[in-house]
Image (cartoon, rainbow, N blue to C red):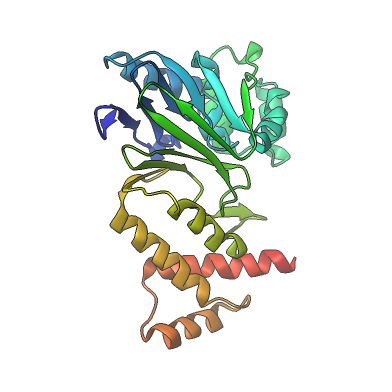
Length: 282
């Protein structure tokens, strides 16, 4: 079911067992805006059915936060103006050329163009796969875009993030709510999960320039300012300890600088920053 943040903002919580990210709904006096369309036709349908139970203005816009399949594969089901940044648009072009029969899906998985989880979700939650073709976005922006839903402003901005280069965030100033998609997360390259250390501080600065009190993340749902600050602190403290591809040296440096050992989150982040050094050296 939809969770209510305020009279004008709702979210459909993430479901890790189905690889479903958080989806958002922002309502103005005239129109509503959806944030991400879900990982499949069925995910989008489930979301729309929940929206139908609300007395809200018609959905006019949909913003896709980045070009990862679990955030956009439901877009065909939603009758709205699709908004993406220019890099997301380029990345989606590949998906618009895909065919979704079993033979093609197995080829994409074999070529590492698609995960096996993505294939399984498509097979089980995208009907009419033989004729399925991903829609094209309607509005393509470069850096920032402002949408007025009727006494409800949404600021849409592309940022360089540790998760993807095409990350888009959505800020609602009067509510001090920001939808981050997956941008604060790391990524996987050559089977190694890593955090792009060079992008960490610029990303945090880009997010913190917005006066936000509630943060919606793709796979954690909602965090308040205190929880988000702890997350940033653990990330930055871990990053400062890593100056090479040596995990042993990074942990020793962390202990020296902080007069304690890393907690579980910090150790996870330290390993991810070490992996970033390994990726950069390959």
